[in-house]
Image 1 (tube, rainbow, N blue to C red):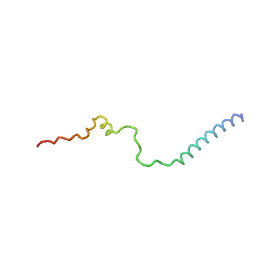
Image 2 (cartoon, helix red, strand yellow):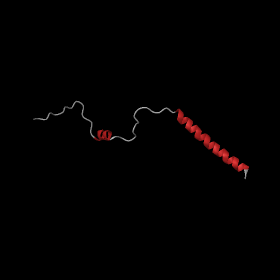
Image 3 (cartoon, rainbow, N blue to C red):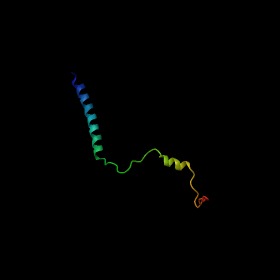
Image 4 (cartoon, one colour):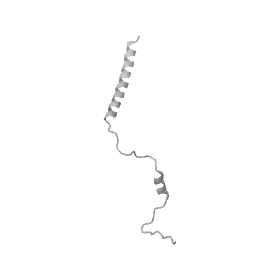
Length: 66
C-alpha cells in the first residue's frame, strides 16, 4: 500500500466535497423568485401581432350597412 497515493486520493476527494458543500451553501442563501416566469419563446399572440400590420391612428371603421 502506497501511503502517498492514498493521501493524494483523499485530498482530491476532500477538494471535491468542499466544492459540493460550497455550492449547496450558495443555493441555500438564494431567495426563490416570485411571480410568473418569463418565457424565452414568443407566444402565439405576440407572433400574430407582429405579423399583422398595425392599425392606422385616427382611421375610422366603416359601418356595415344593414
